[in-house]
Amino acid sequence: MKILVIGSGGREHALVWKIKQSKLCDKVFCAPGNGGIALDAECIDIKAEDIPRLLEFAKKEKIDLTVVGPEVPLSAGIVDEFEKNKLKVFGPNKQAAQMEGSKVFSKQLMAKYKVPTAAFKVFDNADEAKKYIRARGVPCVVKADGLAAGKGVVVAKTVGEAEKAVDLMLTQKAFGDAGNRIIVEDCLEGQEASILVITDSKEVIALASAQDHKRVFDNDQGPNTGGMGVYSPAPVVTRELLKEILDKVVYRTIDGLVKEGITYKGVLYAGIIITKNGPMTLEFNVRFGDPETQAILPRLKSDLVEVMLAATEAKLSRLRALEWDERPCVCVVCASKGYPGEYKKGKEIFGLDEAAKIKDVVVFHAGTKKQGDKILTSGGRVLGVTALGATIKDAINNAYQAVGKISFDGMHYRKDIGKRAL
Ligand code: GLY
Image (cartoon, rainbow, N blue to C red; front, side, top):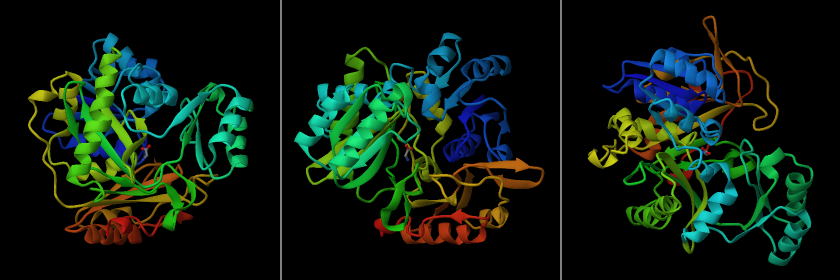
């Protein structure tokens, strides 16, 4: 099979790396890819949002399966376009992708089908939102309805902060149309876990659990990022808790979508907060997590292409249970100094080969580009240094041993990834 992966981050590198190992795969392309992906796949210079050119490429190359990494093309309807042209594509269609593309859609669906989530209200008027915040109290969370590159969520500890977020979104239109409507919801307290499933709307296959580290500095300090590191499995997600999450969150959501006439095919990623009253849904994403994928896929022994193909063809029920490596996996993100704010690009990265020589270590590239023989930084999150280990402690040690071999000007990483799991 010829397989096209769309995207350019660490998640897409992990997907390419795993897809390449499939007995079904003859060739992998990645659009646009990055400096590390270029070593594993043929990179095509087409942006992930450029649906017409991606479609033209897939038709011309006779791509057998396209795997969409990021949420933006999914929300824009790439799956609908590819399917109209009889091309197989792994991911939800435009209607289903509203689970991430519209927080209002997703929260209203959760409320209708009794999926546990924080109490909320929807607003398109700033004064009404502020009145509600003053009456309900803080802390609270203010969320823009649409996609805002991970910046549309404000956790407000004071009424002033919450009102500022309301003005930013509804009055100043900082996120454009994505902020035409906002959600104000109660703040959930507890550990967060990522539960990813692959579904064709009839069958659901859970992937191994994972726990992300969202803040930029150790001990969960500093601003939120796309994720500074992750481990899988998340010990906090016991077998019983996973069953509860699948029953109350995942099945109810997929059944709810079906009742609304929406078929969901692809990955559904539930961000869960484990509160003292049980698991509550923070949000849904309609794609693989980043960096969760980097720690989950090295543990997957089964053929990922077989699973994605079966989901695409609505034949998941024919598959056997997935096989997993019991060993834990840890991914430490190396970022550019300043991320998630301003940062410099174009810094040469050293030590990649030495790091990759360490047993059970894979270095996934996120924001890198190849220039001649050199690999340079080109993004905020630069690398996902990933390691398996006999125990979580071993996996942590292996990952940090590999990080120790790597350097670039301004390299920043958290020193406490996986500590919570010890
Ligand atoms: N790890 C967070 C995300 O993928 O959105």
